Structure formats: structure tokens, C-alpha cells
Amino acid sequence: MIIEKTFIEGLLVLKPKVFEDSRGYFFECFNQKILEEAGLKETFVQDNQSLSQKGVLRGMHTQQPPHAQGKLVRVIKGAVLDVVVDIRKQSPTYGKYFAIELNEQNKTMFWVPIGFAHGFLTLADNTIFHYKCTNYYNKESEACVLWNDKDININWNIENPLLSEKDKVGTPLKDFVSPF
Image 1 (cartoon, one colour):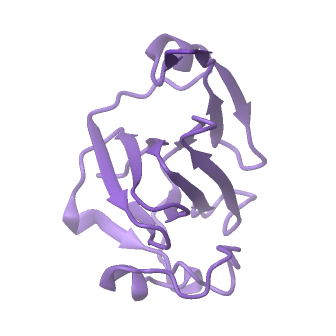
Image 2 (tube, helix red, strand yellow; image 1 turned 180 degrees about the vertical axis):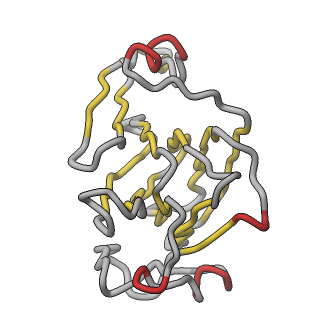
């Protein structure tokens, strides 16, 4: 597995070694030892999976302490534009975003540590998105940064995504009280 750092401290892109032949393919999508050797010594306690149609945007979500979550995310089927925003107040990249395409062809995984708002836009119908979490979900601890905040200026490359009611009314970053 190749593990790459990004320009934002803490974010990791994980590219598995894929073995393909006429029967199909095989790859390790999780190996605790390899992650620990890369400095990622997290314990994962919950796996989540979603199915979305093309044009669905889910985000930008975070869980507040003490229920904050790190996430190891990947696409099983389909494709997404996966986006995170650094909401760590003391970070030199506070308010900056990082985006990466995750899809069933590249099988790339993405580590999103605590202190980031996370979201994704589905690029194909019937996209199955999977994530391993380092803490249990807690409804009272959820928060949402506005997906189209002009100060962050994320290039989603879509004008009218399909949004949940909660995502339509996310908090602009300038008004977001970050505990990180």
C-alpha cells in the first residue's frame, strides 16, 4: 500500500496494491499493521455505508468532542468527489479544503482525522460509500459547515446538488464555533 501525505497536515491518501487477473481483482482495504507503521494508530469502532444517486451531496459534517470521529473512507461502487475542510482553529490551513476523487476503479482510500468537516458529492448512480470511524455516532454532537460557503469556495462542479434539509442550512465557517 502506498500512503501519501497531502498539503494539509494529518490527511492521508492510501492507494492499495491491487492484484488483477482474468477472474477479477483482490486487494487489502484495511491492514492495521500497515496503518500503524504509517503513524495511524487509531482504533476503529464503527463502520458506515451509504448508497446515493448521482448528484447527491452529503456534507460538510463533523462530530463535536467528546464524540469526534476520525474516518477512513472509500468507495465500493461508483465514484465521489470527497472533500474535507480543516476546522482546527490553530492549524495553518484552517478554512482550507482538500478534494480527491475516490472511485471503484482507483480503489483509493482517504484518512480524515478529527478536526475536519467532511462531505462528498456522488459522481455516478448507485454509489456505495464506506467509512470506518474512530468513535460512535452521537446525534447531539453532530455539526454541519455550509457546503457552499463562499469563504471556503469549494469547487463542487455542480450548481444544484441533491441535499438533505440539514445540509441546506449548514453553518458558514465564519459563524462556526470550532472546538478543535
